[in-house]
Structure formats: structure tokens, C-alpha cells
Image (cartoon, rainbow, N blue to C red; front, side):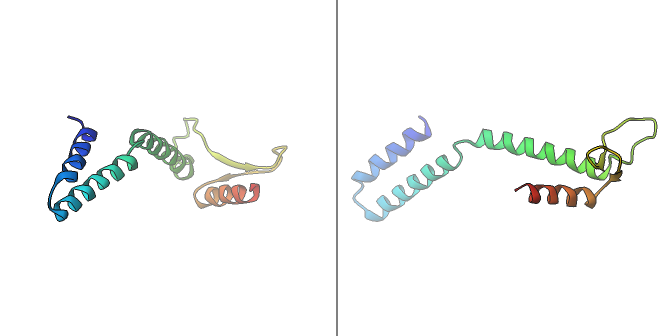
Length: 109
């Protein structure tokens, strides 16, 4: 028997229960089950979204905090602020990156 079947069976039982207190408890529990079922309807897609968000955050934290501190023999991503023709540039790390991203997002709205 599925949860949906159990809820329907409980509601059907509540219709015939002679005690109003019991009827109210059964109906309240059924309503809560329905509410939770609706709330969790897309739980797997929400978990996937959270996983992708976590991975993005992990990448960003590495880029802003550790990308500049790699072995000199390795080539790694880094963040550089530069003008359009790349005649002016500077390395960015940590809070500088946060401030630049936040400002760009704010200015582009």
C-alpha cells in the first residue's frame, strides 16, 4: 500500500469515526502528510541544484583563495583585472575578487 493509499484510507476512516477528536487528529495528520508531500515533490532536482551550487562555490573559493598559491612549475587558472586592450592589468585575489564581482553584478543591473 502506498502513502497516498494510506492517506486516503485514513481520510475515509475519519469520515465514519464517531469521535470528533479522533476525526480531527486523523484529518490533521493527513493534511500534514499532503503538505510534506507537496513540499518535497521535487526533492531530487533540488538536491541536484544544491550539488551544482556547492561545486560552483567550491570552484570560486579555490579561484579566489588558492589559485595564486600554486607550484611555479604548474599552470593554473587565476583572476586578472584588465582593461579592454589589456594594456593595464593586475592580479586579483581574495576580497578584491569578491568586490569586483559584486560591483560588476550591481552595475550591470
